[in-house]
Image 1: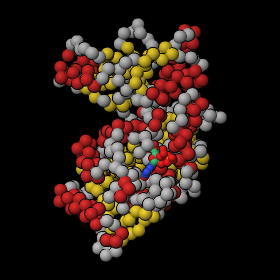
Image 2: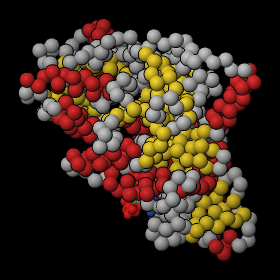
Image 3: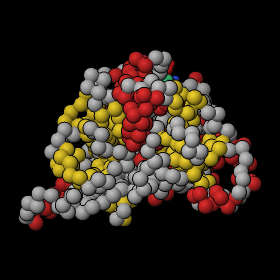
Image 4: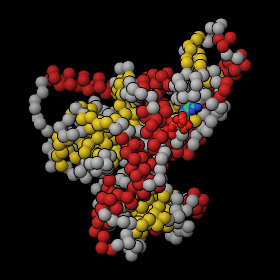
Length: 555
Ligand code: G4P
């Protein structure tokens, strides 16, 4: 069992005080965020520009190259490459001005999966990136819903302003109406597409003019006061007038900027810019760092845990196997929530009560890994994981804390997993149980005991391919997937009793999750809505809370 305190070296009150001040300084300088967007909105491009400001990459194109490869898909070789790529950029840390910024990568494209959702559990802020021509897109909406669950502050960057887009007022209306978020435009565009001339900063009344550059090149920026007489000769008067009229409209009828509402996830500041031409990116980064919330206190079994709690604590939000194909290693990503993390520290593993020495913690940047000497709340560290960590596990020093864990998100793809070779059953069972524990996929079971094969339930198709591939390569079992026609899953909040009370239900299949809870599978939303209409008292939820103290069903 874990002792309550490790290495009880007596610190003098003076050194404790300076340690507390040091921790407070480190926490104050940190900001952490994830970018949520639909493929092609420009996340890779924006990430690269942000990193350039932090001096984290020397060469434009370094991130882009990975973005390109990520789009490649077909056979496993590509898949492996693809996974390596999206995973090695799991967290990017850079210093900018007097801040340390942690950018948590949320893979888009084909590898969109539960990992993406879980990464958001480790983020304190999110940047919602929209393509000005497309507005809100499906993946952005899904990711936004996950942010909403945790009330994460959202910053909106409307990208590709150098190209024809939707009217800016419609883009704001869409966010307001569809996401139920108040919006506050930080800057306002003058013209769009071919006629995009720049933006007006609403607070400083400064105009930033956009100088078009050749494709892919850095644009030029010129800063002028709104009342500068020269402006008239630089911008067509009708474009300027229209922008000013719209700003007036926003001043009268729009929301006001309110930091409290932003931090409660109820208001989003909106920025217009163009990542590719690097227009509006630096002002965005500056404003973001000013307004974003720092490492927040997190809910635990013991109430909220302050990041300034002197003892280290953190939780595992992502596990990744085979990050380095040459070593077949496994890495657990831990979000530091409180105190100072130090290399070689012995910590307690809350779920098992075991003491673990963390001897080779890593910071992972692109293809490179560096051993971390220390880390602070808001940071992410990678730990070698020889199978002892599960998603949601808490590591701590000092008094026991256990973080709330990460809920199960509603899967959208379902498939029977068949093992055609009975003599391989032992390995099949081991693989399925371990991959479930690792969070690679959710496992559901038929309520009919005679149907013993597990049902794989995933958010992204790639998750299923990865599971199948790993079963074959790591456990030596060739399996067969038999797709099911369901697309929607809902947990029954009241459990089996609530389900029994409503009696027979139609057009859905009842299964159970690994925690013995009833889950209903529907072919489409229409069937789900029909059930809701027929049984308004049946409470269904799309996200299942974390379970503790119950042994999971093992195959
Ligand atoms: P993603 O990671 O969100 O999927 O998007 P990514 O950055 O890869 O960008 C998708 C495409 O959009 C890229 O074009 C990129 O150059 C372009 N893009 C990003 N930001 C802007 C912008 O501000 N303005 C314009 N006009 N385009 C932008 P591509 O043709 O797929 O690649 P490439 O040939 O430009 O490298």
